[in-house]
Image (tube, rainbow, N blue to C red; front, side, top):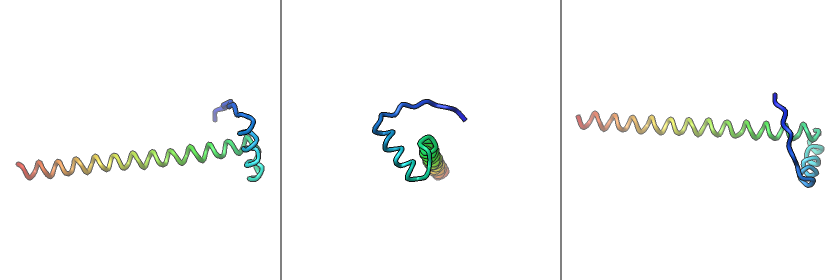
Length: 72
C-alpha cells in the first residue's frame, strides 16, 4: 500500500465529507473507497477492450488465411 498526499479545495472537501458521513465512513476511508472502486472499474473496461482488440485481430487473420487458401 502506498501513501499519497492530495490537495482538495474546501468545497470539494465539504461535499466529500457529507457523502462520507451519509455512508457511515470517515472522509479518508470514503476517498479510499471511491478511488478503489473507480480504479477497479476502469481496469475491467481496459481488459475487456484489449480482449475485443485481440479478437478482432484474430478474426482479421482468419479472414486473410481464408482468402489466401482460396487464391492458391
